[in-house]
Length: 282
Image (cartoon, rainbow, N blue to C red; front, side, top):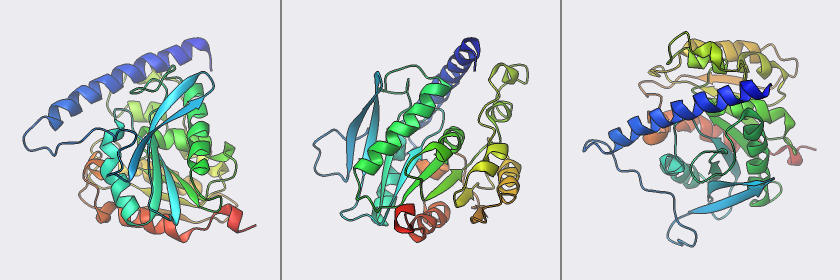
């Protein structure tokens, strides 16, 4: 990717992120909206979640780690474009209740994470967060990647390059490519300005991992057809790994993490708990 393309990406993603965060702040302030608490402070022993820092290269990522006493599995959470770590607290609590550890982190340029918000940095961020999560768990713990919305592109991009290999890949409310995603919510004239990266409907064919796709029928942002295209491409893989597409009913794009229920998360929990770690299958 050229320097100019990376700069276009950084500017357009940053502008979109700020617009979405301003909208969400207004919604959260509404009397009918549940209040979202900030991420826990380090040393808060009353919460299973702990704020941590992930130093790597010349920058530091902020993250929140949550775990039961003896986790049966773990999930690395890749959040969407306008999200904050606090938005995922309820999800992390739900996963902990089902004996699954989790780590959600801010990409470079998000929140208190330092560094530029570029595709190269996001790829490196995924490696750093994955290594950190693995270091916090027993070696044999199955670790899955879960990419939500924007995070589905980042997680899919990173998945084949992580070592040791993740146990599985979960894509929630995914899009087929970044440019196709942009066309869903920005004027058509602007979407070509974004680099045509994260072409999940193509790159998924090269990923040798069990795959779960979850895409609700009430997503007002990305059409269900995008999830179907990814599923179809994944089923052409020669490796015979499982591919499942689940369509929860009546859950909005943001509702999946702002108001997490088992109607959306049960299939994810089952997927994470049934797959062994690649280290256990050697």
